[in-house]
Length: 448
Image (cartoon, rainbow, N blue to C red; front, side, top):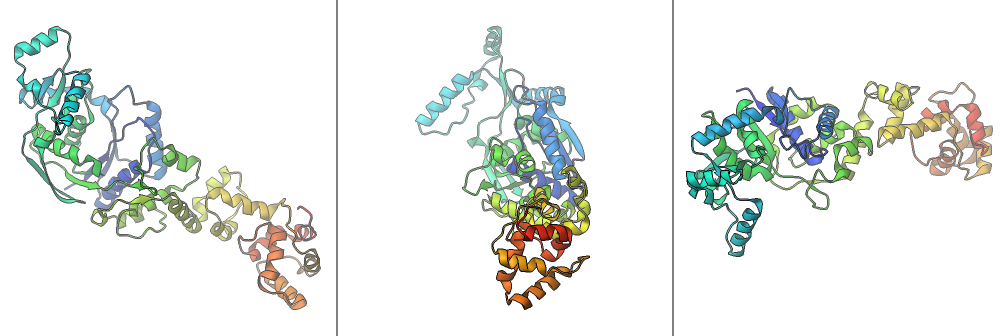
């Protein structure tokens, strides 16, 4: 069987970590199974959907490398939804309802007040043709509901195992609003039927939707419904549910403000909530080969931004120069070569951090002088030029023999004077780049 999966975000906000986890799971499953990954925009609500957010969704997915094989938008398929609605009307599975939102709200409050579940009472099914004609004559427009069969709906979930729900415990879902706008529950099924969707991989907040959508699917077509997989939703480290309105956790803010690498996000989300250890990965192909829905735990996973930043650093530490050459040039650092990148990358947490070490190598910096007398003696003992990777060792060995200093007492005053930092890349690589003239100025306490 050819595998076809999809994601269907609404272009009503920016993608956040929770959205991307669903997209990533679908993408990795498709790649692992040699299948097709589709991006489908759920944009039938014209009052909330914008082209700006649609473009942002495409940009974020593309930046992460989650490239889709097929693309569609529900706003292009309104005629198809109307066609299927007519099919359901003729089969008696779609029926008109004329209650206003205020009337429905009052019904729900009354039911809750009586300790009953707020399930639609199907009052509209009691309307005669004459009643419907009279309401229409008053200018009332109906919304259309799907008549559920009050049976048990069951499926074998790839994450949660066997699931079974009584459809009688649910309200008949609204398919189309009174203003003619078809809703997600309906459109999604029609699209999945037409797109030959084989697997629906999504968050566990859609479990109830699945009960309804299986029945809608069976009312539309005789082909088998997709295989479902409902994974636990991630929460923040403080236990708060993720939301597209949490702008600080949007993919755009992670890319543009926090400078997180795309593969850091992918590598974390691919393993978060699974039995696999979270580890740095450089390609989506690696993650796809390792992906297994069966490893997804039933426990609620927590997303920790600090863990993401730590993983980001680890990924940069193993990223080859060719992968960042153009990005360094865009930062105005085209002079950085492969050798410098390879020895400095272990000291950065985001790409732009490399600038501080290039500043150390090229200047100017203002030295930190902690022991002027020792630095003066160090300047007098500088090794002969030209300097290479062995010069630092020869210099410090001579100073050790001359002064009796060793360890931190020997190295720290030199590092602070030459770099202004108490940590950083190995000095044996930095010293030749600093050069003799700058080294003498810095050791003398002069900015260089």
